[in-house]
Image (cartoon, rainbow, N blue to C red):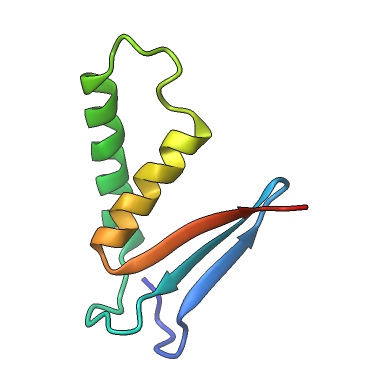
Length: 85
């Protein structure tokens, strides 16, 4: 949970990408519980695997990124990444 009420986002710097998570301005639910988010992410991963069992390249980094985006968007947060130069 983010305890600092003035915090409005997080940036993580990786080897190939910069990742960000930011609150949507009009989001009434400014508290994010990461344990609940990861439960939703795992649910989406399991659902994706079940629905596409014949695809061996199913869970690429791109597919996981799309799942994260979908889950955070439902909670009123923007999640994204930008390739580092």
